[in-house]
Structure formats: C-alpha cells, structure tokens
Image 1 (cartoon, one colour):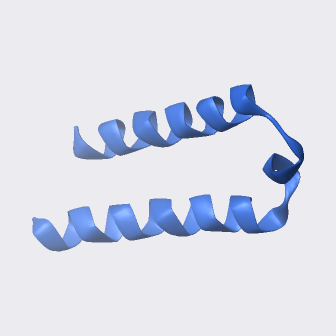
Image 2 (cartoon, rainbow, N blue to C red):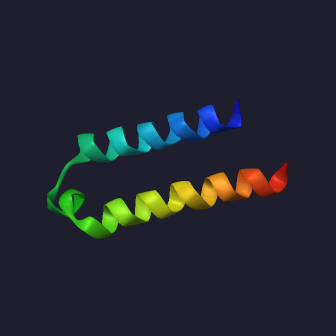
Image 3 (cartoon, rainbow, N blue to C red):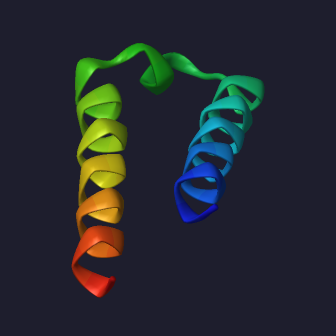
Length: 49
C-alpha cells in the first residue's frame, strides 16, 4: 500500500510539473532530481519497516 501511495504521489508530481510547463521542465537535472527523490523515498520506506 505504501509503495502504491509513493507511486501515485510521484505520478501526480510529474503531471503537475507537466501542466505547469516552462523551459526548465525539459532539463535533465529535473528528471535526475525526481528519480533521486523517488529512490530516497522508497529507501526510507524500506528502512522504516
């Protein structure tokens, strides 16, 4: 259930950024930052169990 919530939150964040738009959305550092945040969130969930 927790992983599902993380997945939904990640998708909503990506959709929100896509709706907002702008030139900075297409930059690689944003994609890398989102991926790193998702990995850290999953790692934190694993450690808390």
